[in-house]
Length: 405
Image (cartoon, rainbow, N blue to C red; front, side, top):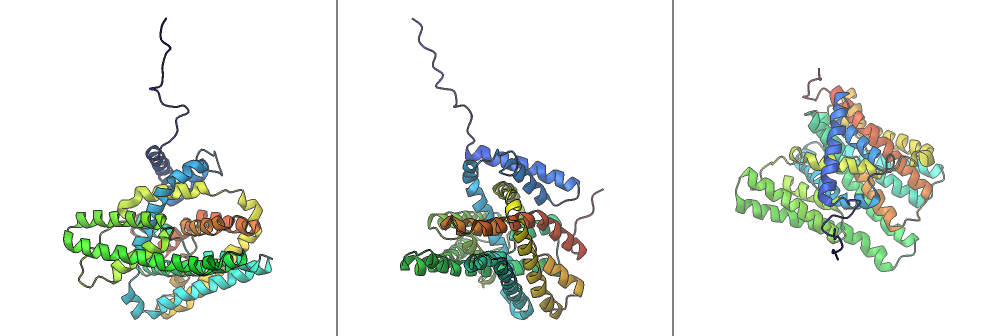
C-alpha cells in the first residue's frame, strides 16, 4: 500500500509575514508613496503617511495590530536615531549666547500648555485629563522637521532655531507628562510606591541610561580613533543598544536618546567624536517609521473628537505663535521669519503618538472623548504638518532644493 503523501516540508498557509518580510514590505510601499508625493510637489513624508493610513486601520486593514507590534522594534530604532540627531542639534553655547532662544522654547511650551488646558477645561474635559493632553501638546514632531529640512536641504535661522525649539519642548513635554503620571496614579488609587517611584524611575533611569551611552561613546571613540566609518558603526550600535536597554528596563527611549545626543554634542571637550551624519543614512528606517505611524492612526476618531480636536489644534497653534514671536524678534529675526518660526512648530506625530500610547496604555479607561479628541488632533497635524513645515522653509528662503521641472 502506498505511503500517505506527506507535505510537511511546505510552509503553512496563509503565509505569515515575519519581521524581515514585514520590514521590506513597509519600506517598499513607503518608498512608492514618497515618490508619488514628490511628483505632485508634496513632502515625501506625506506619501509615507498616506500609504500607512491606506494599509492600516483607516484603509484596507492589511497592517493588523499583530503586524504593527512586530514593526515596533523598527519604530523604536527610528525614534532613537531621530532623537539622538535632535540632541546633537542643540548647542548649549548657542543657548548661552542667545538666551532669547531658550526663553522662547520655554515660553511657547508654557503658553501651549496653558491655552490647551484652558480650552479643554471649558469644553468639559476633566481637569487631569485636560492637563495630560495639554502636556502632550507641548511637543512638536522632531522627525517631521528634521526630515523635511533634510529633503529640502534647508539651512538658516528658521531651520536651526526650529530644531532647537523642538529639542527644548520635547524635553519639557516628557517632564510634564511624567510628573502628571504621579497625579494620575494617585487619582486611580495606585500604591504609594507607584505614585512616588514610577515617575522618578522614568526620569532618573532614562537620564542615567543616556549618560552611560555617552560615556561609552567617548571611550569607544577614543579607542577606535578618528575614522568616520568606524565611528558611524559605533554610534549606530550604541543607539540600538540604548533603545534595547530602554525597552528592557521599561524606561523611555525618547529621553534616553535625546540626552545621549545632547551630551555627545556638548560634553566632548577633547573632540573625540566626529560629527558623523546619521540622519541621511537612516532614511530607510524613517520611511518605515512614518508608514507605521500612519497605520496606527484610525481616522474614525475624527468623527468622535472632531470639534474638541479642532479647538485643541487652535489653542496649541496660538500658544506656539505667541510664545515664539516676541523672543524671535528680540533675537533679530524679521516679523515674517518670527511668524514662520512659530508656524514651523505645528507638526505632531510620532512623539505625541508614543506619549498617548504610554499614558492610555497604563489606564485604558481614561476619558474616551478626550482620547478621541487628542487622536483626532494628532491625525490632522500629522497630515498638514509636513506641508506647513515645507511651506515655512521655502518661504523663509532657506531651502537648497530646486523646483522640479
